[in-house]
Length: 131
Image 1: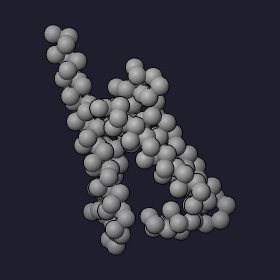
Image 2 (image 1 turned 135 degrees about the horizontal axis):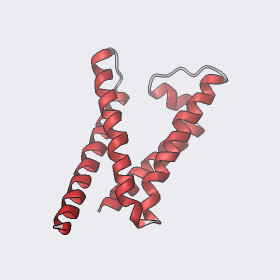
Image 3 (image 1 turned 90 degrees about the vertical axis):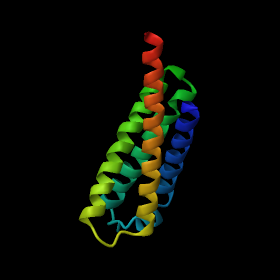
Image 4 (image 1 turned 180 degrees about the horizontal axis):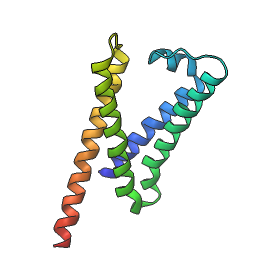
């Protein structure tokens, strides 16, 4: 189940990477960014396209190397825990947040909680097996 979950998250990140790379104007506008020519476009491509691709590959990695599942799951917990933390702070600091941002927050919370649940179950089963 953990590998299936990570695969779904990985596919989601690959889709986001494609969207950010192929349609940066619409993607950035959807989340409230205004891209400035040159540097702004480059930064968006690198941070959103490149980072989303890297995360997607990390979460898909257990498909071809089963022994990295725990590592990929921990990365998922850490990344989404940080996203949830900063997104939550952002909701207190800023006004006029759009519905897309709330949808992203919901997805981040779901991925964080599910990945944390998988991590805790796997950790507990590993501890029980060691005893």
